[in-house]
Image (cartoon, rainbow, N blue to C red; front, side, top):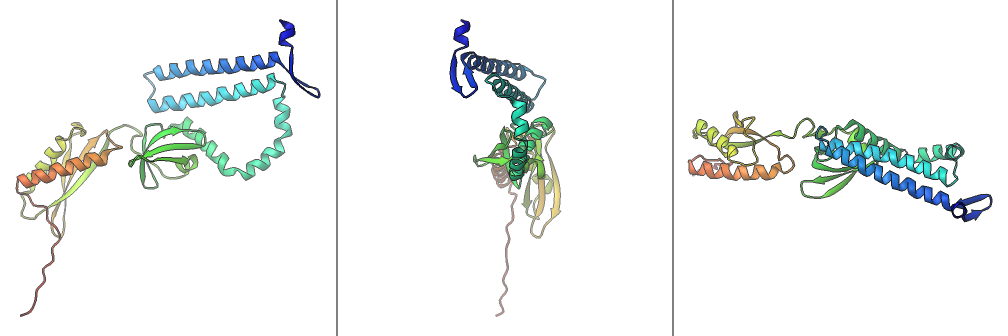
Amino acid sequence: MKEILNYTLIEVGDYKLKLASVLMVCIIALVSFLTLLIIKKLIYKSRRIETGKKYSFYNLIKYFVLVIALVLSLQTVGFNVSVLLAGSAALLVGIGLGLQNLFSDFISGIVLLIDATIKVNDIIEVNGMVCKVKEIKLRTTTVLTRDDKSIILPNTILTKNQIINWTHSEVDSRFDIQVGVDYSSDVTLAMEILKQAVLQQKDVLKEPKPFVRFTDYADSSLLLTVYFWTNEVFRVENVKSEIRVRIFQMFKENNITIPFPQRVVHTRP
């Protein structure tokens, strides 16, 4: 058995790759895989940790375990990692200067995973674009826009720019719809209709209660704004569209007019 394990597979000069080393690398890989599998099950079973944070914790542990497994594997097959790093220090400095943006993305990825201010399934607004976070990797983050386009963002964009996280503290967010009614309209009735139109929408939360404000006197209309809360943040434009249709129908049923711009031209006889 000892002779089999000491069998030399590759021999180049003084270097010999033995069967025992290859088997040890396989064992390290297997142990790493099983360890990550157990850790993933334990993390995702926990009810105390949010889904987004579970993803962040697992990925940090995964990268740590993979680095350790890689170092152990290199040492097992005969590479002295410390000597290798010391000998290539100058080369790494040169590469680092040329790849500053790439390394910056990696550091930003680590910050995102540790800080957890942006998590998987969060709804964020970056550069005027509302999107859902689908995956956070070390270098890039994949997001899904409202028109179902997947965009890959360098992590530095999420750490250097101002980001609006619609679901940072809680999933529910407040939105509003503004509508103008004719000056001859019953304002109290119009405000009540707006509130009822919102309450009839299935995706609108009953608590906090929706409310209506008389916003302003416009040139040709009275501006009213209805405010509501929903947890359907990513597809809220669909919710708004359905509410607007209902408002239009209810206004029509109650003879409340939505004015439109008009021009009167006077001609001399």
